[in-house]
Length: 165
Image 1 (tube, rainbow, N blue to C red):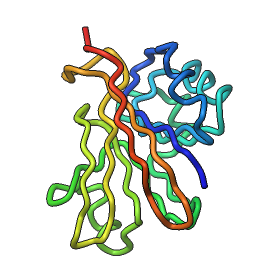
Image 2: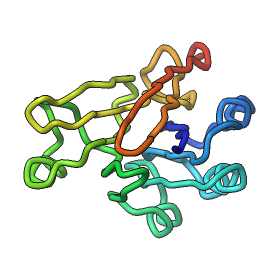
Image 3: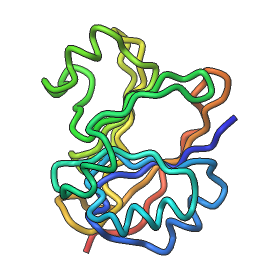
């Protein structure tokens, strides 16, 4: 069993509450637009950290973190990318991969819109944690926590960090 903390679109913003909300997590995942290598290093110092780069990330982050990351944890096949879309509106950059070999869990960011949806056609759970930073169109800063356990994805929590102002 692994407890995961998931966020995206921090845009180089650090909230001290990340430490509190991720304290009980086994890993932290970041779905892109980290903002700086210094911020990524702060997450790395907290917990094991998996991340992908986003469209605003510089060459240092792009060198360190891939555009797409596929891995298996607790018997859950995971695909993470920054620009991914959602059921019925997947981004062309991942659409063919998703249809050819769908993971059990698809994680993306970019839209700044918190969205968790199940794609019945692909039998895949899609998660976008919204945006945890202060830059962008979102009204409320959010992150997610959930558990992976022997092939199951459960105990999803939505955490609101406050208004984006």
